[in-house]
Length: 381
Image 1 (cartoon, helix red, strand yellow):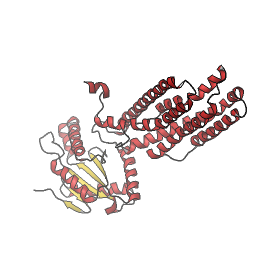
Image 2 (image 1 turned 120 degrees about the vertical axis):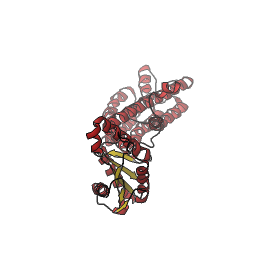
Image 3 (image 1 turned 90 degrees about the vertical axis):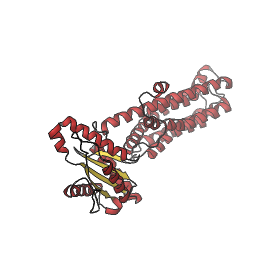
């Protein structure tokens, strides 16, 4: 009961995906990187335009050369923010998004570290004290800003840590806001804000994951949709070519499926499809991907898997069966296998076409079998 109150209906895998940035699907990572990049640009643009406006206040409150030094820091920070905002280089992976988010937080952190010694002890009247306090609250603003990004708990902690450290160092030097004893309470408040902001960021990530799951998965079988399968296979194919790593695909077509729909109706046909998808899913490793390619067709993408390993896996699937038909007979499938290093296709489309061709060869050779590289593995007697 306590567990359900804490994590609700989330599975352990979903919870792990909110805590650490490991084991997430490539499609989620791409969308997350794109959103982080978009919001980095938005926040950088806002800060780039607003940061110089405070120069007028510094000029009014502080004497020369203090206001000039602060103005120089503000203009430098504004230029850095605007460069980040207008950086149009593509951001298609999480490491690139992390780097840009790190830069976004590094700019105000450095500004805070450099401006703090200049402002310490400058609150000679109430108005000046209020302006100095505005500088002192910068870490609170930046850490609260974590909430606009879809981040895991570990990422939130990592990006908050430099600003927390800068705030702690400033307090030891001499707090701009409070006497040191009261400053410890402010530090505790800053840590709480970091936790709340990270929880908000995790909530955004959870919401994004749920929406992406609905948009990318086939509702009947739980497999990825073909549109998303195209994107995933394109990414995996490019990676396999760059790194010279194996990549296998298995084209799985259920045998005599049309007869199930014609004889028993589409509801029974849907049950057969779900049982077959469950059987395929049970064969998959964490890195493998199942795509519903057509009505009764599934494509299994197996990164870092040579052809022989893929054949062993799908042969095991064929022997174990893909569920039971309404008439009590086992549901079988014809399977074609193709692999990047062995077959050397020119494109991911050619790789799928080759696996599809071998699946048809399996159909024509008697069904319930696996075909790879022109050899037909007949079912055991």
